Every structure is written in structure tokens, then in C-alpha cells.
Image 1 (cartoon, rainbow, N blue to C red):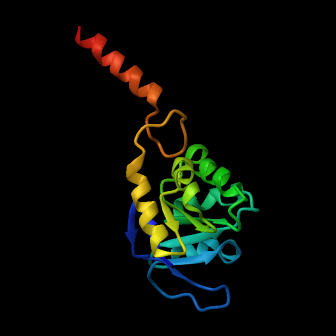
Image 2 (cartoon, rainbow, N blue to C red; image 1 turned 135 degrees about the horizontal axis):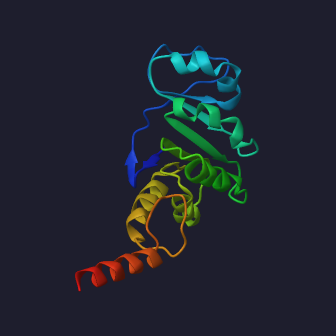
Image 3 (cartoon, rainbow, N blue to C red; image 1 turned 90 degrees about the vertical axis):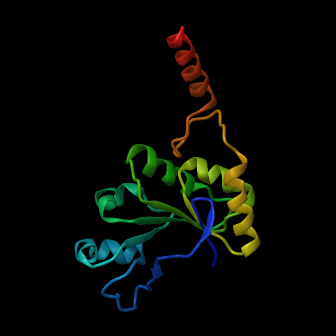
Length: 171
């Protein structure tokens, strides 16, 4: 499955490990929330990056105590009509200041890509190579937004205010 990360088609450093599979001793792994929460301390001590697949019907507050141990959180979109992962992403970025990789998985549509970026996602698992190319191009398309959100970009209003401030300071 193609991965778009930071606007570019990228290789995936994380290996998905099933709940009943043996955990590799090292390397970047992506595991289910159930497996992680069963023994977060032991899993956090292993060598290599750790990522967790967090279901959209589970409260992110359960994940918060462990965020500093996670290199990546993958939030699931079971259907394109289910937007709970948007709320989870914004909470992780804005309220809990999570700075690791935030990945969107599942049914991701081209139409939703910009909204996912604005919610704080920075990596996307897509189904087709053509979608990966379209997603990578979308990152470059928009540079100014009106609404503040989880991606940390300065809004159009704040840009204007900064410009006015610097103009008045130079007079």
C-alpha cells in the first residue's frame, strides 16, 4: 500500500505485527491498540520505533499517558463517511501536543486529503499509486488558509496582522 508522507510518496519504515505474531526484537513496528495496552511498558523498552493503530471508536485519552513512547499513531477511517479520526487527530496535535507521525489509514479519499492535513495528519496510507501521486500534489496546491487547525500553519488573518505589524514597526 503506498504511503504519502510530508507530501511525497515514501517507503514505510514500520512493519505491521499481528496480535498473535511474535514481536521482532528490533526495528520499527506498528501494532494494534489492544496489543499495546496489554503491556505498554515492555513494548516501550524494545529496540526500535513503536507505532500503534488506534481505532476511531476508542477515546484518545487512553493513549495520552504513552504518547512520549510512540513514534507514530495510525488513526483509522473505517469508511469515508466516518470522521471521528479527524477529531482524534486534532486532539492529539492541539490538546496533547503530540509531535510524532500521525498517519491516516483505511478509506481515505482524494477529496478529504486537505482536510486531513489541516487536522494534523502528516502521513497517509492510500490504496492506489495514482492516489498517492494526487495526494502528494495536493500538499503543494494550497498555501493559505482562513481557519486555524492542528497543522500549525499561520492563518490568512495572522499573516495580515504580522504584515501590518512589521510595516508599522518599520515606519
